[in-house]
Amino acid sequence: MIASVLDAVVILVSVSFIIYGITCIGSVRMKQEFERFQLPGFAPWIGILEITAGAAMLVGLAVPWLLLLASGGLTLLMAVAVFVRIRVGDTLWQSSPAVVFFLLTAWLFFMTLQAL
Image: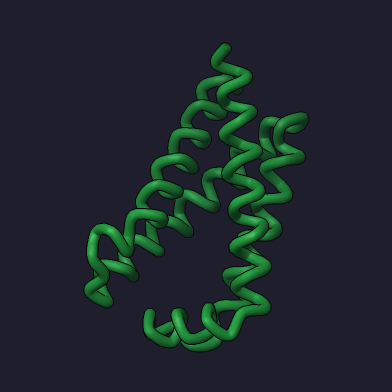
């Protein structure tokens, strides 16, 4: 049961990061958001990181050390995202996606670490 829940969360999180990463690279709105975050020019780099880590998490379903690495990296990325949102004065509602994905990736990291 736990393995199937873990797999489902991995798929959900991976696909979400891949989609968000593509948006970071190709969306004018995301460029504006990163300017608001006082991180102009970072959107494409974050997008590449998110696409790469999302894909690595999917592969990580078969290669657990890769899931550990990708979920750990995304946990750090999302911790920074939460900090940035706090720094620019976003509300809890505006910050909630970053908080939720921080918690999900941290959970995946610790569950994978425990399983290794």
